[in-house]
Image: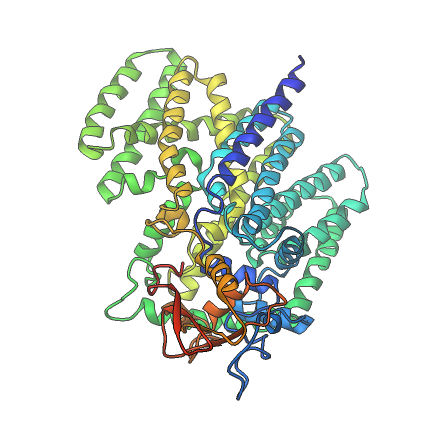
Length: 586
């Protein structure tokens, strides 16, 4: 069997592993608030029903039916739903999700499975991206494996949100960008790639606005390294496709109130961050240097799978300083060892690290080894950098760094501008992960070239670190990761389909279904729901799963907060479900 056949066999196993991790427990935990918004928006339904005036918010009309709920929607209804429920973001994703639901249904498994497919497609794309641009199959396989088990990708592949799509599209856009640049270096003219790149820019911007940071990285690369006139002219021209699509959307489409909504939210979050006392301390804080540093440090460390989780393990200034010194000392020892093959440097480092671990890490004995390993991997990456031959490849190294750090740096700058830390979160810079994974993979491979026999220790510690990450993966799949699931207590199954099933079985002509009205604190950050008097969300969520042509009489009781009732025609009230506040409203 040739190397190529072995490589593709290994790739198949990696894809199966990735797919298995992503579909595990896929519908065990009910969709949460943002996912519910995605499902409603994809059907042209604004949260709280503004685009469904035939059902809600019409004076003198207090009842509605599933048939009215599912009445045909026009284009403005879809615009309004995106405008009100997702600040005008992600229209391209909603077009895909709408058609996906038409074919495969609206169950939690079906709607989340779309994200699973895009996540697995991103893994495959990463393999071929590396194979073409680095000409290294081993590197491609290693990076693909790391992406398969990266907790960030697993978590966001299990959400009915735009993230997996935007990660795929931005990596594809970067791939096409590099093909354009390399073609131009070889004087190969391919105008079709420019057109494709422009179309991808439109898809990216309309899948998530912050994908713009990736194109900023492309522009910075051109500014620093491209000296041929043709790409300087044609790349901006191709990007006019994306600019035109985005411009139309925020001027005439569902994004025409995006900036006003963001401004409103910024004021709310700023007020909450600077309130005394701050009821959201640790979540929404003033954007001081200390607060931003504290919140951004784990974002930067978790960006690299080799340092995932270390920021929380070595919390505290003294521990951070000591960890930094350990890394520096370890790199110094490796350099000395490589220069003279003198094992005394390794003995000194070992003794130092044992005492350092006792002082700094106590119960987390493995953490100091992981910190040392990160320092060594960083050093090995610099060695790879120095050994890189060919001008194009050296430029490509810089490109990796730009795309790894620019999105997060952009978030940090915006945080200081806004004056609060809300929004400084990993998912908004997740476009960087493919490139950080490549950097870690390069360092691991370099260990086998530059640090024999120490490379076995480096690889062993990295494998141990991956085993510690299995706990994080288990938390993600168990819906108990604050970092990735936004909660440490697992949700149950989605209650709304079960409510709908019970109502379908029990409803008889003359009955009336009565829904509760319950508003969460989160509504105050949305200009459209800040002053809501009667929430119809529970009614909307249940109707997603009722027969579309049913003519059940339904109403919302503004005085009832938690219970769904079936009011029989003889006046009896049968309780169908009790949401118990936030308990079953995820």
